[in-house]
Length: 553
Image 1 (cartoon, one colour):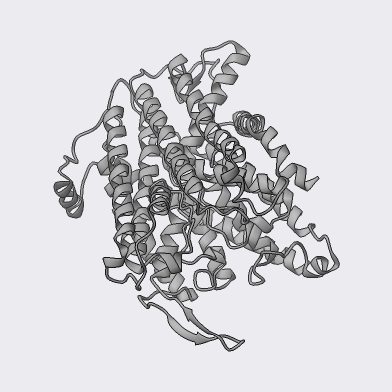
Image 2: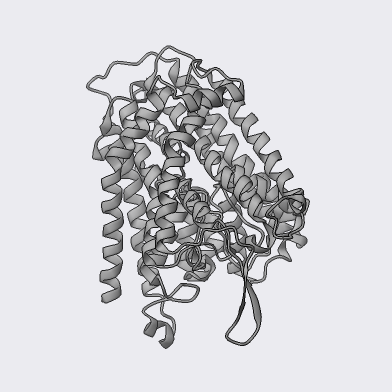
């Protein structure tokens, strides 16, 4: 009973903190991306980049800028890893092998942060700071920029211009992510998270063996990994490591960081389209599904006691930190799989089969509850367009959303968006299960082994980054296949989103009539919840029955 009360208090405090941040931060985000003035630092950055911050771009130009910036980022992070041994603060570590370096570069640039390596023994401090941590900032900013571009598509009319990618990128990093990261770093240091440039300390373990305890700039990377919904940990144990996440307060604060920007972006969306109720409706859909998953996961773990020892521990405590317990572990698991963060404070492989299936299915929804920074908002808006199309078919009217007609062109883009990620997940899993070299990496045979492979491709294609243990991912096949899934799962949907933004921006708003479906009321919220669950459920249900459902039953 005491653990239940403590767990409910944690959830309550988290919701109160999000509610308190929603208005101020959402309004600040809207102002950031609608202000016509550039500060001195921003103008200096534009001169260095060689761009004119006062010009606007069409969607093809915006898309080319996204792809060009991301391609250069991949090459930079890849090269930095390869020459690591010649860099300062390398801690004497050699350059990273090419297949692993490609996987890591693709992972961090695509906001996935899948880690097929042990960070503290593979990556030096300079690579962690100037390569990986920098990408935690800019990859998050790219996602927010694309979401803002789509919002402008709904808000503007009779124009081909949807903003300037370079302005959106610089403003997001300089006005939003960097100030929040500085404050968050100070808070984490105060909570006991490590922050130094030490190569490590020699200590003697309890059994008398010498051991090196590595230090490093942990708090500064930890805060942006959560705030930007990145997830790549400084240590191999990620946020289960006491240097990254020392106590329940730091765990709750990190969970808040994961959720605060995706949640607040819904208010920015409502303000930018001129109707705050639209933002509330989108948030209601996200919150409803997130709450259902959290309740189910906590129930499965708390009642997952298959032995007297587990019952005495208060639930399925295998793979969980006693510092956090059941409630904080499931709260984190649902937050991290719903926000494309991928950080973990417990071993997802040790979750009960049904909870593991829930975590996987949560990612399969498209990371929209509330999703990654930016990607959650634009993913939910794509599903909202599908929902109004379905509603239009039901009543025999041309579908409209935010006074924009949803024509065949828009639906083609939405359909391709919805099909892209499932195709990557299912085709990738099928290829892996069909190759003996890929199957040899599975340490757990049977349904759970299949779940590990399915989870890996789900995590990669949805840009999450969490994983089930028991799969040896650091092989040429998985490094290459998962790296390609990360890049395609990130940038193909982005191109479709930007194409939709350009198409909507060119339209003339249609008048609201008595037959217009109100998209800010509970009827539409319920319909959109159904669309999110059913579309993903029908797509992935057969594969889920072969893995977590078969194991759970």
